[in-house]
Image 1 (cartoon, rainbow, N blue to C red):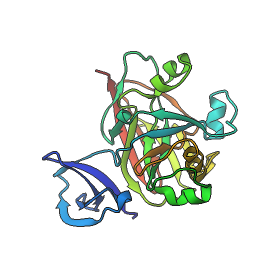
Image 2: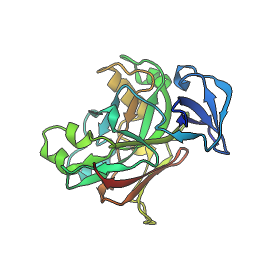
Image 3: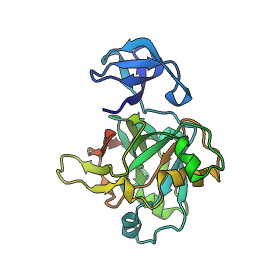
Image 4: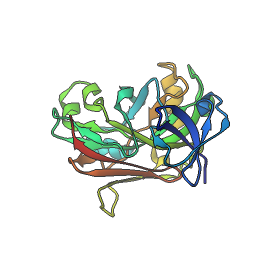
Length: 258
């Protein structure tokens, strides 16, 4: 099994990065792993911590319509170049935390996605150089208030509510292009979304290079690489689970917003 890098909060409120063991214990690192963090002698038992989202990025850059079939279901052509937008870091929640359904919206959708964690400062890099800027991979849900996205002339409000970026549960260093992404709602046996990572229009390396021509990417930053076809609405009380082979699964419930 690939090493699983986590971010946790202890019962005393201390936040650490660490390596998750098979028995759910966590070996604490002395710094974020993409900043050269090394294992320490400190071990947290499975009852001694709360699992957090695996990184705390300075920014979240997301990519729209990066699967041809998803562009088609949205009634638009595949973009000629990556379609970028930002989500605020305050959208992030961890595996197991609740997505809050905002009172302003009548339709909130799931969007299962592969997320990239940046490991090194990237500015004006080539796709070949970009491979070395990618530190690892995790799972994200680009939750979207679809009615507000369609109503507004841009996507900030529809994509930007608190809790609209479930992330985790951990980061792995390597991932096969053949890995399959699937999204399930409640106990339905058939996935709502199912596609291989290799079906992306623009590869992870191309995305990192392209984005680095626009803005400087910093260690720990996050890129959401787009969702495949099969997006659909969530209702209050639903549970949504996103699985990616080689990483694991991210599951969150939906509740009425406060």
